[in-house]
Image 1 (spheres, rainbow over the protein chains, first blue to last red):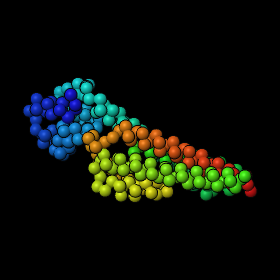
Image 2 (image 1 turned 120 degrees about the horizontal axis):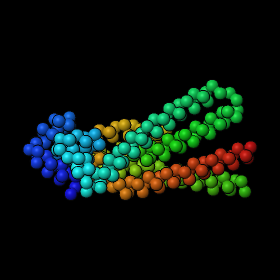
Image 3 (image 1 turned 135 degrees about the horizontal axis):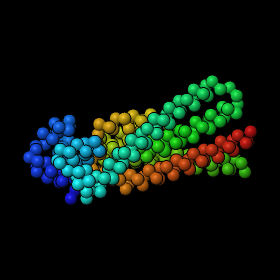
Image 4 (image 1 turned 90 degrees about the vertical axis):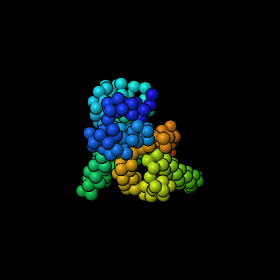
Length: 130
Length: 107
């Protein structure tokens, strides 16, 4: 069974309306509707709250919906990649500042090399973040 | 001989740059369609046409308001595009290093 149908079934079993669930999770009613119609998926935090609300374990809630599980894994990976991107941008800034102050030839060449590599790494990370 | 090599590398580099640009445009467009962003073609062109990636970062920041719609998403195609883009970027960068190496050695 796909996650949307499961969420709807569980909500109806608990005699809750979409508005009530939306209020408890601090999202809009439209968001709950989107989840139940599989137009989008809840993130991990809201999945945990939904499991608590519907008195199910997370495993029971997600079981059978591989797409949902893959989406959660992808979201977690995206957070890690986002942090790496921020770190690369910061490193870029340090290297550029270093280039401004360094006057020796070979140190400048080394910094430029590192800067180029960092830019490549940043570009590849950004591609995988999309 | 050197001039021929320089011309061949130069043309290959330009072709790889164009290919990279095209693949990046396709990837961003795919993501924009999956998020039901208006005018995905124009948005992806604006995001991918900058040289300093500022357009890409702006797109990544602004797309947070639009969640992915599962029905419109194509994860397999997205993955495929990412791999192709990464490969073409690595080729482009290698050609750039070769070009720079030849130009410096020539002097």
